[in-house]
Length: 232
Image (cartoon, rainbow, N blue to C red; front, side, top):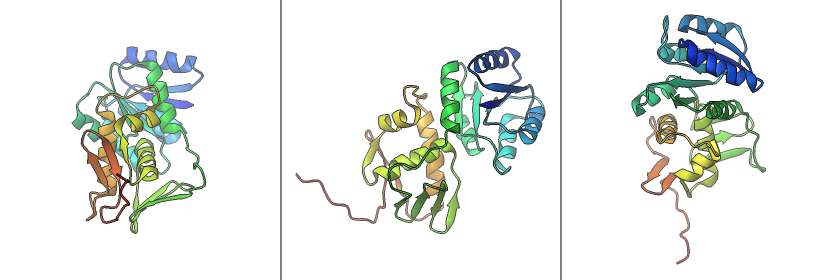
């Protein structure tokens, strides 16, 4: 992968660069937000690793500017800000994933592979549909009614899992295992990605489709549909 690291801490930037270069990746480095945005706009990258607290331009502002650019690369935020509110701000600014310092370098690479991986349609299903929500597996286009919905890769993967399982409830453990494999995220990561997804597919619509089943998991289903009950 060709990667851009935007990080003003030289020690952290050097550790990331050394590790990722040794793993065969090509790495460019920027030590401030303005220089990082310039590199992101003039070069083609597979992914960007972004700190939030940067001189010149903070990471959230940079992320929002990238979000407005067509075909921008996925963004992995690496930051010391560890609250759920901070994670939601980062994801809503357009980031694809969020990791809190200190982190394991192997997990950073695993997260990068997750957000850059282009998934192939599975089985014979080309379109998934739940109520008026549709996911076209060939174009990666999500719509609800006549409205297009934009989701980052991890939220898109979670949506696919829930739509395929609908109307069944999917456990938190199954969602985490399918998306992150044997590198489980911190306790708030899944909640943050589902929050982004819920805002996108439900917030502006009368009928919410995503439901939290407390203590069990999550369900994506049409609340007005009648489903067969399991035999006693």
